[in-house]
Image (cartoon, rainbow, N blue to C red; front, side, top):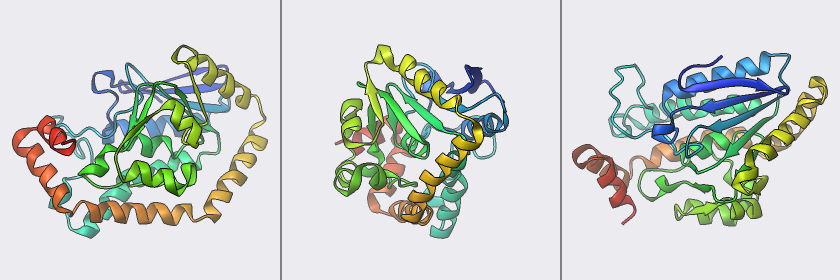
Length: 273
């Protein structure tokens, strides 16, 4: 399956699924999420595919959720309704209906590799960290800047990936790190020169794709079960509740007010003051 904003092609038994909103640095919308997950499920059902690679068109992998006003007229728009309009329970339910769906990538029976260049920020990290491994350019940028004013990650794989100290370093500051540091702390599996990113990702993915599906699926399953024994599913529920509570903070309310009255650039400037 493919669309204008999510492209899909198969090469050497690898399904390449491409976020295709380069003019928006592949910022997420509900429509993009729907199309991406549909393409992933289609690849899982395709007997000619042994591995999936998620990538972004243009200058970045994914800059997070699209925070610009939605003018599409489509139900759901760029994301969930503004948190200030929701009760706490409504906000949790909205986050479950949105970010909770990234677990579809986690539970696919085929491996999913994320290939990151440029930015992988905020909601982009929610998506990437629910996949099996990340290969990044050394100059790629990772972070969750929204923790400075808007909330907290509505999925949480950070502590599993990098341990408590680096998880706190990144989520208590909103700092960005490059691909080199991300590799050193375990946030990504491998960081390479930007010119080597495509070749490296394809070599790893095509090698996995040659393994018989029943063995591939079983070995992915036992690795995932090990993380489940550490409480992964419950932690994702707690992360959504934490994000919903953070939305009620004065700083989150002020960010929303500035964005509505003065524009997103003004709100981001206030966030980064």
